[in-house]
Image (tube, rainbow, N blue to C red; front, side):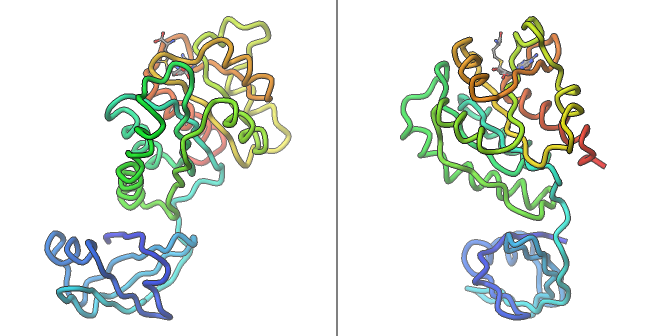
Length: 250
Ligand code: SAM
């Protein structure tokens, strides 16, 4: 059954009225009609199964036939602070991270990010939101991951400190004094962490000063092994390992 995130105000009691570009997708692309069932999500954590009643030129209406808690959300809430990447790589991280179960993406502007301006990043937001939406519908997410505004490195560390466990995958972490592995960090906590912030650098990586600053804010450097992963790979590997270790990939 096709799934669609819609604004809550399209839902009224046990009826839904769909307007806008989604009407074209339902009618002309998916060729759905009266009697077909779709799943509607309003980002509340509930999902509603809807039987289509009418497909018009401007709107599609339907009747809610079942309401259930949306599945598809991991217990562990991972926020990925991803160094802004060139071209499609950042979009790849958004799409795959959404499929994996990341709940929040923060475009991170660090020293070695190759971007023209913050404005340049903001201009991509709409496209990035759409990529997240499509990936969330395709992967049957119960909630839409949030895309926060781009932040500089220090404010990102401050924001992460207010959360739970914060990690910075760093390819030099293996050679650090008292280096800790991801597994020991995750197993070392009393309770499994409810939220995890992940800092992943851009193509050029983090500077040692950035890693040191992160450590001062309690962000723990961890290694993802002896091989150098591309930036868009590293966040996914770290998120998958965390979700696996904490039982969210069962
Ligand atoms: N220094 C890297 C190089 O030599 O190509 C550039 C950074 S790497 C392409 C991009 C980011 O992925 C890094 O900033 C780090 O966050 C993460 N990363 C890649 N490989 C890693 C590893 N083996 N352990 C920990 N983090 C890694």
